[in-house]
Image 1 (spheres, rainbow, N blue to C red):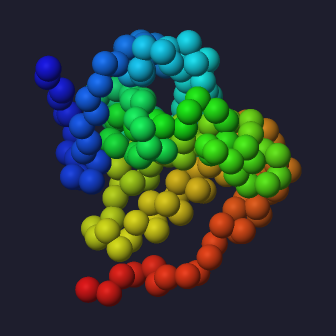
Image 2 (image 1 turned 90 degrees about the vertical axis):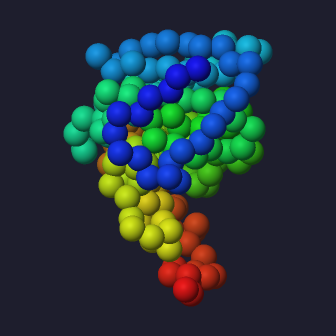
Length: 184
């Protein structure tokens, strides 16, 4: 198999996913959308991954064209929650909305409307993969932008009142348990 990445890539964005995948092909304008899922999940994936195009509309509205257009966009089914690998997002949210196993990630009845992993991990294509920090101790910047793009997605799709409810509910996720910058 040959896999080509035509853009510079930071090494935390590299992953190997090996399995008996079925390939589902789609397009968003001239951008190829490729989904790799286990054979028993093809129908669930086709339904759940229909959320990709509205997610692209929202993010491109705010931040411009998808930054890895030559390499396309992929979702690859994995046995863990997910990760923002450059142009091939790892997806393990069990084809449900919100953030598995929670049915209401934020507690305000908005997160059950969309797949958290598709939205949050794809947000990192703009912030985390196209624009990245110099040091792993600055990952909070990536995650902060990912969370902010979730909120903008909610506003774009459901309106300003839902945006305010969602962003305020995100405050409950802040724990301040550990320092942001790790000791070196």
